[in-house]
Amino acid sequence: MKTFDYVRPTTVREAVAAAAEPGAAYLAAGTNLLDLMKGGVTKPDRLVDISHISGLDRVEDLADGSVRIGALIRNADLAHDRNFARRFRAVAEALLSGASAQLRNAATVGGNLLQRTRCAYFYDPASACNKRHPGTGCDARGGDNRLHAILGWSESCIATHPSDFSVALAALDAVVEIEGKAGRREIPLEAFHRLPGDRPDRETMLEPSEMIIAVRLPAEAVRFAAHSRYLKVRDRTSYAFAIVSAAAALRIEADVIAQARVAMGGVALKPWRAPEAEAALVGARPDAALFRRAAEAALAEANPAGDNAFKIELARRVVARALSLAAAGTPQRMPALPASPFAAVSGAPAHA
Amino acid sequence: MGLSTTLTINGVTRTIELDDPRVTLLDLLREQLGLTGAKKGCDRGQCGACTIIVDGRRINSCLALAVSHDGADVLTIEGVAQGDRLHPVQEAFIAHDGLQCGFCTPGQIMSAIGLIQEGQAGNDPERVREAMSGNLCRCGAYRGITEAVLEAKKTLDAPSRREVA
Image (cartoon, rainbow over all chains, first blue to last red; front, side):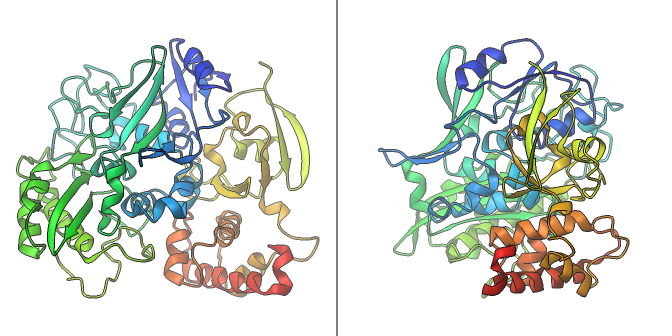
């Protein structure tokens, strides 16, 4: 690992100023950043340690009914915050389906959004990667790309974004609060991560030295509390990134879907919201045929980036099943295997 | 800034000079303080052999910079027994053959202590397995590990033993 200067600001303002130096990177828990630095993938000259800044580790209910999640809250603390998880169960379920207990105890809300792709070619400094070194090419294109993107990819980059948390947040119209030299601003989470295009090295909408200070769920998000789930298919039961995942949230009135939210993970370089699927659901009675139609709409534009055409049909089934789980109702207690297709749910079909 | 970090390790507070900002908690414990119980398996947060408890929470010490944890309270495997009296989780690992070669065991035990403190898994073996998925055991002692965690939880839940939790 290359050495670096270490600075520890105590306020957001100080942090933003310290991060204005060229080669600076923010350090929160470091669960992804240190891994990348050890592998020589990232070589910051300066680490700006924001983990000692106070006031960014709270969940706040705001006057307008929205809920503000501080950027430094640990993933486990948010998932186990009863008052939060009771209202936003798909978010808690997504968090608990990610990483391991040790990593969730350390990793922060802001860090989760900013984690880098797990594309093996990005992680291997000997491979060509346009994201790591612009203009060098993409070894994933002709390589082992079973887990790569099926939506929104480009010839420059076929990686996916690994966050589960972001998928559930995107479904609920979360907003990212940002602070930088020019002051505060906010961006819808759905627009926060960039698709690769011809500049896969530009990953988010953050400008240099800007930092995430909070993520906000709008008041309307709580209306999905009774019917919201996250489903994640992995290569192993636990402690693995998604092959495909989906967040589904419904508002059902008099047996008819009044409002629907669908977002997918593991399919693109950003959490992929599916408005076509949502439109197909609204006004209809929930049943398996409807969910299948919605899933087909969600994947209408999908295209395999390599040896991963199976992910398209897998994603349809994951979306349909997540919708049927959401329609059945948010379970009283978090399932023993959060978001797992292996979780036994009485009455649910074994196959979507 | 001069790099130092003040840590309370197994009940003893000390200020440690760091000659390099890159030192992780794992390397500090093993290389500078002679506490080699936490193991360096993958050094990348994938195996859990380096698990310690920091401020009451189990974490991977290989992905934690020592300088960033200034002021933290650290518990390692060296600090869980009381003299010759093993911690109930250590006793349960022995009773249930929760190990073979032993390399992952300090991390498994620290993770199990953290899991029981978190109070999320209850007595459900499936929840215990899920909550222990961050600790790999290449010998495949998972069955014994799960049994050990369940028994240790029962022991620690008994009112007479609560003080050692």
